[in-house]
Structure formats: structure tokens, C-alpha cells
Length: 97
Image (cartoon, rainbow, N blue to C red):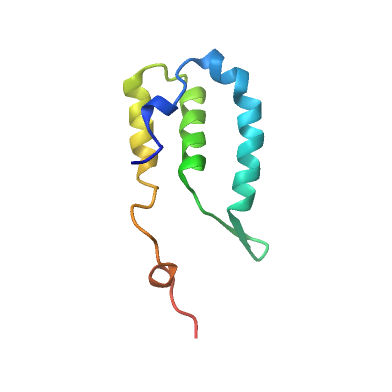
């Protein structure tokens, strides 16, 4: 089961505002560790449940979503980005010879 679930999202704007700075600081470190720089112009960032949870929480906050149905829509949008099985990048990327 995915951790990207409705009960993990804070709908109360003031409650999230109280922890938002700490959540951002924590997420910046996580995102930095999941980024691969390719030259000066391209960076790949690999999402996971933590990064997507943060993104959903930020969207709920930024868009002032206060209903469970609204938050559920955001979750469903971002849940599609989670891998469902082990990903083999060898099949996803072209082979360089």
C-alpha cells in the first residue's frame, strides 16, 4: 500500500503552516540526494513517496484545499508518478554504444 494516502495530508492550513518551514528544510535535503546532474543544463530528480507527499501537501496548502475530496484529487494526480513495480532503467533509457 502506498503511503501517499489522504490520512497523511494535513487539511488544516494553520496546522501545516506551523510545521511548513521544517518540512521544507527536510525535503530540500531529500530532493538533493535524489537529484542527478547531467552537465550544466540538465538535472534528473527521482520522486518517491516522501517527495510526492510533500508536493501534495504543498498543493493543498497553496491552493487552500480544505476538503477531503479536494485533497483526494491531488493525491490521485500525484500517485500516478509513483512506480508500481521495480523499474529497470535499462529498458527506459536508450542504449549508448
